[in-house]
Image (tube, rainbow, N blue to C red; front, side):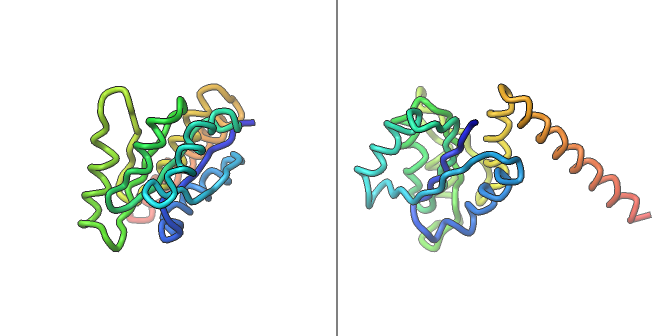
Length: 160
């Protein structure tokens, strides 16, 4: 079974990252959550990045605020796909510093980047990556998207 690693720079990022945890659990995908600070625990960051693929992870979701180096540094160390979640934090410049730090990666070190505080979409994207080779997960994603469609149709009907 596939497993997603969800990491964040500090505990204060958890309220945002919880959306990724929740949606992945809804899809019955195993998650392992950890705090890995690019600046305060660089040794842990290097160990995590170098060994994630040997620990059964299929995708890593990395959330970070401020200078937001965590997603890019993890991407530089792992062969796995990395999804970055820019987090608007207390030391952030309206979140733009986080967005740009994660979005503007050099060639050869891709990080898929979602919207500011967009951890739910990071979880859905991670599930879609896994679903491309796991029909059970794909079926859950198809059902989820159908539910979204039905919700919009019902909301439109309620307006009339």
